[in-house]
Length: 191
Image (cartoon, rainbow, N blue to C red):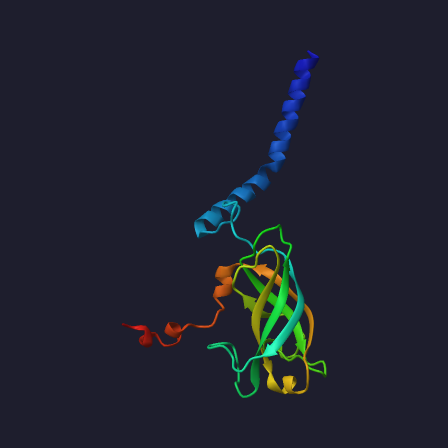
């Protein structure tokens, strides 16, 4: 009789545990169904690409470019100039390549004012540039372009601080790449 009673107690405990998890399971199943309906990889595809962690940037340096790359963000060509940055990326993120990066940091003039055109007041932590090429696991060199105010650059060497990068999805980073020739002038690409 005690064995039967013990089995019954275990069965009641198991049923009670399942009942208490029912709302959680229902919410998860609804989330998965919504994700499937909108075409997302949320928890359905275990190989889904995701944003990854922080990538350290070391030995960050810059050089003044003769001109900005075609279709680069340069709000006023007379008042701005482009800098080509080079840095050593240290990718320790789960031992795998990262398909793209968003670069963050502060570029300041000798007076401590922001020199980056995308962060004019220097108060926000904004993406300075995107690197839309894969960054392998370990250490590698990356380059990116940042537009700065000429007046800030003319004061003397710029101060670079708090540079880092966050892994990103290449498809999203490519949305912010400069327009190609056909996007700028579609008629020039017609055969």
